[in-house]
Length: 169
Image 1 (cartoon, rainbow, N blue to C red):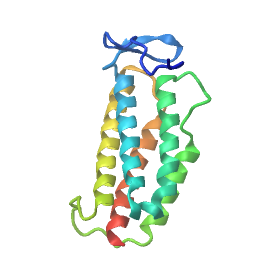
Image 2 (cartoon, one colour; image 1 turned 45 degrees about the vertical axis):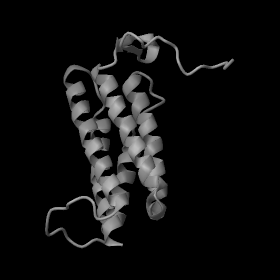
Image 3 (tube, rainbow, N blue to C red; image 1 turned 180 degrees about the vertical axis):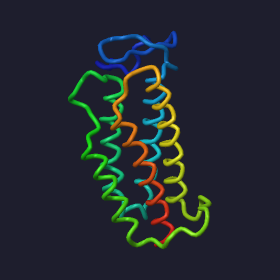
């Protein structure tokens, strides 16, 4: 018998727990944000698994680890151990600036799909934007760090720039 079964049966009635054992509905605004961030990280995992993703693997892996902290902050806003920091946002900006250096100026709208990697980066960008909208909705009724909002906004910019860089290689 498995010592640590994956199922607990505690969520069978549509509830889950936040930090501190607080039970909420599985469609609670915090859970919606966490779900979108989890989906974003999984999509980035697909990008990282594509052979020609090598130039961006380190950036994407770092972002996936930051997203774990992000989810921890959303589920446990009072725990100061897990926070998105200004340094995280500055690193995204640095990644954007470095990646953008080799790109031509935009002269037309981008249509996703020129490469598999780029298409998945565009998908990740749209999931990131959805998470951002859900975080804004959460912030209307609940306290949310302004750094988390800035982080998602900047991350979607980075994903856009990375998708362009994929197609310019």
